[in-house]
Length: 259
Ligand code: FAD
Image (cartoon, rainbow, N blue to C red):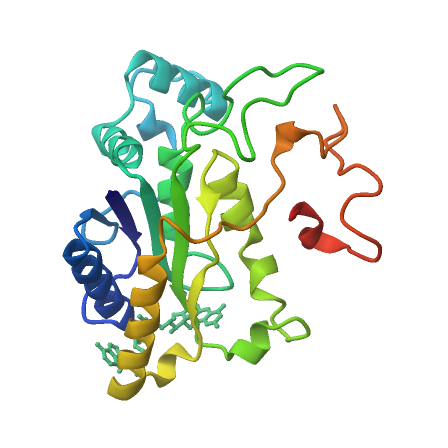
């Protein structure tokens, strides 16, 4: 199978760099084709701005969604964006790998999403009407593909547990896993999180790497997170509110969107 790793760490000799090398070695040994988009090494342009739309008339007010739509539809996107889109279409599974920075992904990776997930490609797809809000949340360009986050965090696992001070990790990752990955159709696997990443020594690294190998072995067989698809009847139309009675009694918050 084809696997794309989108890797966002500035230092190749980091813990993230070592985990990336491990993933490439493990996946390649298992017979997969692996591509790495190494965003810092590629000097990825993180900010979405007018330079992304060279075909827009000079001096015209920049309307980002319209400009993105035109550039994608008319083939005037910048070559770096086109290449990342090609890699995404090539991949059967995509791994986003990053250190948790300020409870989210590093800006360079967010900028990769903002620039590569164009209108007409990853959003604004399908019928948009009173009856339907497009092909999203379980449908879309990446339907049938799998995605997984591999991340490291300085905090302890307890800090990210149900009552932990940082908030539950599933809630913190919801905008990425549900909003960025499930939205354009990916089936999203549970994340692989290394907590207390500053305290990794050689012995612990070997344990982490072995755990990661096990997760990678299940990349195409593990059950994805059961996020509720938008167009399968769980949501009222057009409010897109989860129907009363679904989600169980006492359930609240983001967990409602898991079946
Ligand atoms: P490194 O610093 O490269 O390494 C970490 C440890 O692993 C070191 O002890 C190193 O010796 C060891 N190591 C590296 N490679 C190997 C190897 N091959 N074998 C054995 N040991 C190895 N944390 C949070 O929890 N929440 C946050 O919101 C958050 N925000 C942050 C914001 C910023 C701007 C920064 C800089 C850090 C933040 N952190 C946060 C901490 C951050 O998540 C960790 O610093 C990061 O995950 C560590 O990953 P690294 O690859 O940079 O590790």
